[in-house]
Length: 157
Image 1: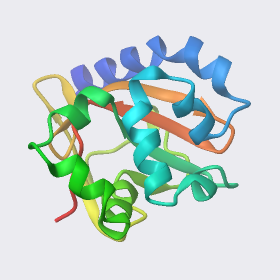
Image 2: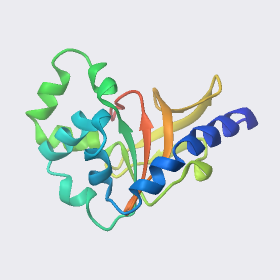
Image 3: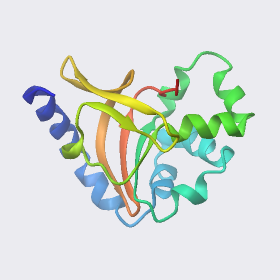
């Protein structure tokens, strides 16, 4: 990762500090539920039966797609996933890494997810990428981990 990319990642992380401090007492699910940009994610987490897991001790690192990210999926994809809890769970757990990985700790390369597959982290054009998603905010603190916001739903292979 280039120095420019690291500086960008750090700057994005600093912009999240105020949010992080306010959320530190809430679980990942609580933090997501309190943010209107994650209403689709919260709906999906409930449909997949992952609420208790993501309210659990953790720690977890969640690369959380926004509502706009879900809206970019091909027509019918979200509805099909919501009707297939097993497939939805596979997609959502592909966004979760065991442990708490803050922005400063992220390194380029393959990162193993809770679903067993790995996604790729890279720096491209001064942006930090997770597969095809761009990280838009980092280090949103929760009592059981951390959230990094992404602009695209990433799909397992």
